[in-house]
Length: 476
Ligand code: GLU
Image (cartoon, rainbow, N blue to C red; front, side, top):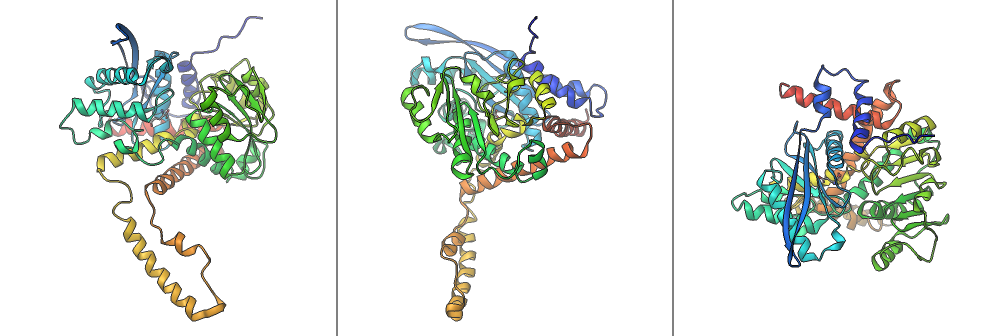
């Protein structure tokens, strides 16, 4: 038997796009205009390290400029290549349209194994890469705003934003050139955990619709659901932590680079995370069985599967054996187009990446707005809100005294009600609202059209329609 060839990541995204576009009535030519990647910049630069010059290859791809700035993370990994960066940039376009963040789509990558370098070396490399991008307006608060992705985080974003600021000393909006910065460098509360939080909010919204839950052959709420998570990086860790600690779900499997942990009674996410920090992997973790063939646990019996690592992990070789009735794509592109087809036929419900992991870019949007307005969210209204609440509470206290034993305020009411919302609460509220509304816009298409079988196609239809509308408004 000859092995069936899997399309590349970018081809896979295009195939999914085409599937949705074929169900739409787009003007001739517009479909192609939306699908294709506008430009990809490749840069090779040298950095003098340890007495010799090291050459690095980096990319920044701009998929669609129907809205500007364009937005998307920068990834540090050895596997980075042009095809991958273009696929990820395309997903950013659709993601931003679906969750209504006013950005076009972009993505960047640097071919590097960050673990091979000291912190000061990484700073040198990052600043040089940022310099190359900023020089061509590929980092710019009004044109192109990077953010973290795999292999990068707050630290790299602070270096990049600072590099832009050094090159643009009179730009009052310099801080808005990059998002995902630490709080003390213009970041926003709640950005680090935003993508994981978004997964939690997405699942909560899914479980608010019994009809949808039933489509996945499940019932009830998140409480008690058995979850397998692949990748305990920033996204997988936060998603698994919140779902187990706040929603009563049970994490039965954790897949990492050095194998997988499985325990039907549940695994403590925080202690596994600490174990990884200390030992570098999950091997020898005491409270679960370890299997060296990590990928096999993707096929384990569970209610919800959360791939939160790399693209293409559910593919033609294993799709048929995936037992989870519900998959939520925390990573970008974890299911290939071929696997998507197989899973759809099996009736597996997939909450697609462009929606599921949009929490990151949503909170990036809040950070960008905060940077442009030069004021922390809640700073003006918080105390005023508290003063107004105080008024009501003092009236209630009067009533309390008057009614004696017949009525009294609930124990924690006063403290809870008095407190005005701080930035973190506002960020969570904005994120929750975004995830609910975006889900509803997808499900509306999913349920109202007979020719739309799955949430992914519905998501593409909503996103493509919005991008098409902004192109039309521009006169294209
Ligand atoms: N890299 C993240 C993503 O894939 C975040 C992008 C952003 O915040 O701009 O969505």
